[in-house]
Amino acid sequence: MNKMLLLLISFSLSAQVSKIEPPFWWEDMHDSSLMITLYGDDLAAYKVKSKSLKITDVVRLENENYLFVYVDLANTKAGNYELTLHHNNKESVTIPYTINNRREGSALRQGYTSADFIYLIMPDRFANGNPANDAHPELNEKPNRKDPWGRHGGDLQGVIDHLDYIEDLGVTAIWNTPVVEDNDPKGSYHMYAASDVYQIDRRFGTNETYKKLSSEMRKRDMKLIMDYVVNHWSLEHYMIKDLPSSDWINQWESFTPSSHAKEIFTDPYAAEIDKKEMVDGWFVESMPDLNQKQPQLLKYLTQNAIWWIEYADLSGFRVDTYPYNSRDEVTAWSKAIMDEYPNFSIVAESWVMNPVHLSYWQKDSPIAALDGFNSHVTHVKDFALYGAVHQIFNEETPWWDQKMNKIYKVFQNDFLYANPDNLMVFLENHDTTRINEITPDFGDYKIVTTLMATVRGTPQTYYGTEIGMRGLKENGDADLRRDFPGGWQEDTRSAFIASERTERENRYYDFTSKLFNWRKNEPVIHHGKTMHFSPKNEVYTYFRYTKDKTIMVVLNANKEAQTVSFSRFGERIGNTKSGKEVFTDEIISFTKPIAVPAKSIKIISFNTPEL
Image 1 (cartoon, rainbow, N blue to C red):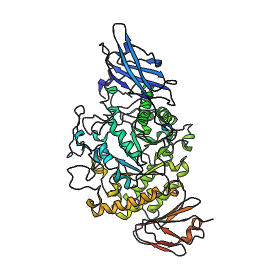
Image 2 (cartoon, rainbow, N blue to C red):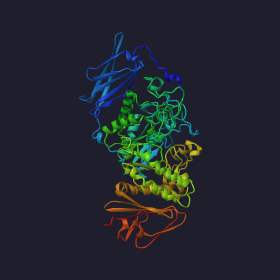
Image 3 (cartoon, helix red, strand yellow):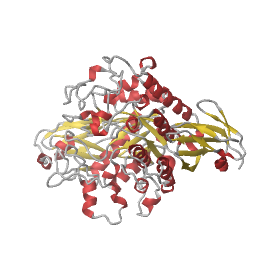
Image 4 (tube, rainbow, N blue to C red):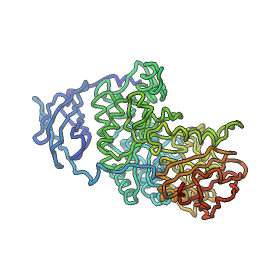
């Protein structure tokens, strides 16, 4: 650990307020208490008064450069206000502060649901819409597209410029990896070490650019999801360089990494030191671990999250490294957000493969209830299904355990979740080997993508997967984060344009877009019930159904064609004589067996019979 972090420095200089956070706020919020953080030289020596704002408390910590001013906005209307800092021996300082009107219907904004299809983008590697902002004089790292670990210049304007492409794919929501400033001197393109949580990284654009992205998406009925990090910041953050208090971060005698024992909250035999190392240990040496138990920090993090929701009209968060936080405090953080926006969505990244441990972090979890705990997180990422898919295509499966049987068993555990529809289903992300490495055969890609698109939950894909992009974890994270072809002016061709895609890229894109555009208009897939049948000869069959409509999905992962008899599925087919295959419009007779080609799929639609 940098020993300078242990030093809390105060200066006896004239007051100069260099930071006011949040920079502004809104009237009529659910929680009327606002904490205004003031940072500057020797501010703790000043008294704070206001003729128009109701100050309820002023907190001074060890570092005399900070003032935390609590105001009650219960009866405060939108308008311009002032705080005044008084000092016996120095000139008073007047600080203007604005309270804005809220967007109509803001509190009832709708989060992402199982009706959505989420597209994950790493902005630096997607498209460079504004080359003029590739570098910034106040930010350390400059662009170098030849460096796999360097910044490549992709930005938010690049995302805006290609919304037509994304929408045509059937996408209804975009999750960008973090976009707030990361001023690390090296490897900052990944953006998970924030140096300013109120500022969009200026190499991506401005706060207004981010707001524009959200607005342009709203015009298309699309939702914007922010990747939020509660657990850690960068060494470059001003509150890390000049700690408000010694307990602002979790400090050790020497650098102590997290144990990464993410299952520890459900471990009945867990040692306290292991819990402490898990929660208080640093993720990496360059990312100081935040102590959410510090009350001003927790309030700061909570307000920052709400500020971005209100400012940028967000629909959801993906929360990084969720189990690494102090459990009760991060739960309070989530609850405050959900109290403010009851229909908002938060998905927790809990990278564990066992549904027991995944369930723990979902609201109303029957597993967490055994511990007397209840999260306020609406969604969890389905790492159990992700793990099963990667396992069966990476390993030889013994004769007694079929590949598709491992998939089948994942869904047998859905009783562990309070709401299986609130799982985010994915095959890969920016930290994993790309699915097109795991399933290089196009038939296998069709099988696992159809699986993701037709089971319960909200599907999430990763930019470039739809054109067959590949990347291997063993080659380093940069290989998973290749530039999208055509995102830069100097690129020789653009995979955003069908005529410039290769034959292989178009084969992937055409299948993926057809599948997810069909899904977009199928409520039975979004909200229907599920019945599945144990796989036979690597053929997995399941049904999604409502009282009016049924979708039958047949996935043949066998290397050979298989004959499927419909008589086995009488519980769902009843006396129905036929259905229509959704991709080919072929009429499928249920009165006789059909041949399903090797490594292929069939999606059959029919009216739900009376059973």
